[in-house]
Image (cartoon, rainbow, N blue to C red; front, side):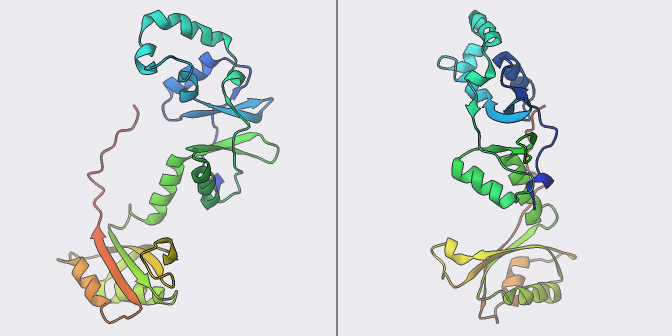
Length: 241
């Protein structure tokens, strides 16, 4: 998957000579985004967040914002250009980079989002940790298949056996299969591979976990670690209104 398939397009940007007041109002009024790419003549030069602006305030900024006696401070925001406070030369990515690489950039640099620019350095979008979560959640299949089986396998060929067993013995429909080298989990044999399989069943079964473990009991190279069912209907939602 590429960044362009998951990024937010038509992103709000501001020119670096505009005021902090304008940036503050945008970030306060539109809580769906937490950072604004800053440009000069349309090309990326910086990024600014609400935290950057509130960092100019004294301690306990949240309470101070509500205090009328600090109105004078906010009047000063009208006189301060964004370029004086923004993070200059921010890390960015391109629309044709992969989601995985963008994730690594964010993780290694401890940032929650990246401006997306074209090859002329013009901002074409932004990708955030929320977009990464959305990508992973959809790819994992949890929205479509409630059951998750975790297993260790000896070789890639075991994937076919997993598919056949779940289909034929359990009557399961597989939604996704994710596999990686078990060396990332130090407690496991590094010659093995971890597999996560999302699936759904077409009929009501009394004990899916026991059935799955029993179905793989004769396979020496497939070790079922767990089977569990996720219920997402009761997941709370606290979106900004």
